[in-house]
Image (cartoon, rainbow, N blue to C red; front, top):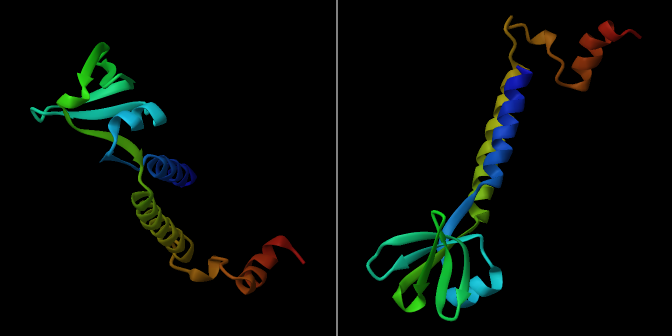
Length: 138
């Protein structure tokens, strides 16, 4: 049981750190120079989308790598540049749902036992003193 809980916690933490979204940026040349993103998605005038790694500006041209090949695209040939960023709203929503699921699961696990005898479960200080006190001694 402990291994399953550990795996669930690890999966939940990984999911929470991975909440990202891709959104267009208003001033692509300035943004790329100032923020130096790891990658950008460039939409060309012909509606094709190119994922560029390590983008930087060379004058009015976006320069970077696409599948280990150097690529240059003039901003005049670009209709949109998008970038991946942390999504706060998605992270909060996921954390809320995940927390409710984990909390509900823990309540279920600790309030039910296989024998159906709820007297064997210590949930409150009184239950602990009455039942578990005899195990622990005076």
